[in-house]
Image 1 (cartoon, one colour):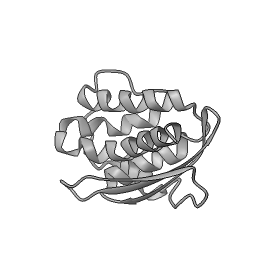
Image 2 (cartoon, one colour):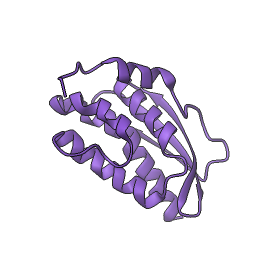
Image 3 (cartoon, helix red, strand yellow):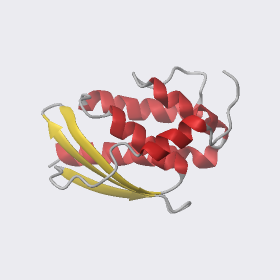
Image 4 (cartoon, one colour):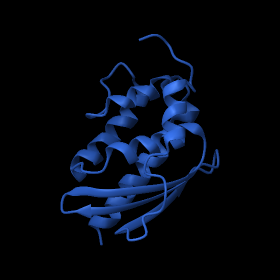
Length: 143
């Protein structure tokens, strides 16, 4: 794969799409996380249907990387099994630390974040929406 700029077209397109953007008024759980180092903030609301994520919504105040990651979650997470989402979030962090590994889960669009691997200070920008999703899933399961 040729080396891509950090903010290449796929990142710009995903951030602009804002898939899943907006509060989930009837959410089972809504959580907020922020990155005090850069000021990114994510609020993630989820609705579960048994062992699957039925609906997700996000409100992001952050950089393009954070917006793009939340948009990918908004597009791909609904319908996924909770266990698979947890695994995917862990794989995503591993992927950012070593892009020679496979693209996380069944979400090929995540390859767009490969250039972030070379910018350790930006890993948390991508991971904040994934961490918010896991926190919301944790809170749903723990009541």
